[in-house]
Image (cartoon, rainbow, N blue to C red; front, side, top):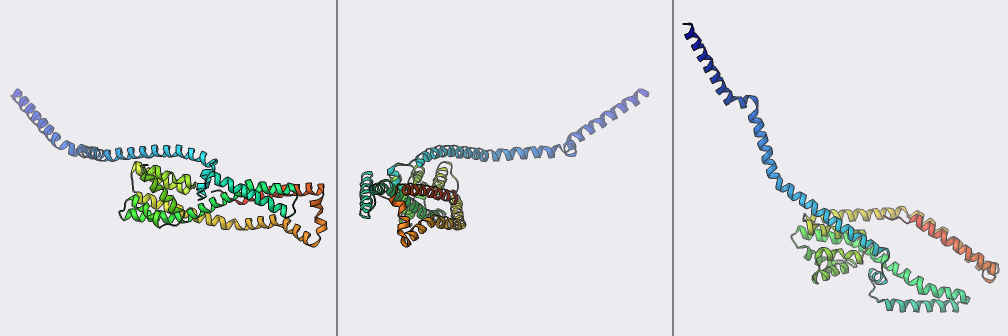
Length: 331
């Protein structure tokens, strides 16, 4: 009897444990949150699987952009070396003059003779006439070349943002980049028109577009032209939205133009003061010459007067250069 009760009790306990194990096996994951955790892990894995190609593309694009920037940096260093000491042919091209070196030298010699004869006809001493001839040979032609370069660069900066806007609108309208640049080469003002025409001519010779655009910096050594070349080169090699990149570039160009205007306006007072201070000695000299010429002619007729006049001119030149350095802002 006792043995039968033990057997029934053991069977009941075994049945209870079995039912409990089955229930726990079926409902345990739901009660303990394992199903929820498993679903989360599966979602994360699925998301990683979906995002992996995008991340791979993103890494590849970033790597391509980095390589492009390194190449552009190396080219920029080489261009800066050329820009530091450009050749005479390059300076003539940047000034918009279609002259050869021989023609430039011939014009310099003619100017030297003109300046020298003008000094002789004015009654200047031979040493002064020789100095005027030297100015006509070396000083005035180089100054004129620099003046023409600066004026051409200012004209380029005034028109270049409009040209970039034309390209942005054309790209947004669905036109190819080459057609947009051709419109700029036909419709824009000088010197933007001629610079973009050079790009198209270079590209027609088989040069890649990124390299053809990069040559714009040689004829127009400005940061704005370099920015444009970098944007085009990166877009050609790494892809991306060209209209968005050029739109940002156009905004940067216009902001830089506004900054130039503000700096020019704020420095006008200092420039006016420097012009007045630099011209006062010459004005006083002319007034003394017209009122009492014998008093000031001592500076021109005696050796001590010539020394004093030369020293005064040297110190005036040093002062003018110092004032010019203080009021010219490089940005």
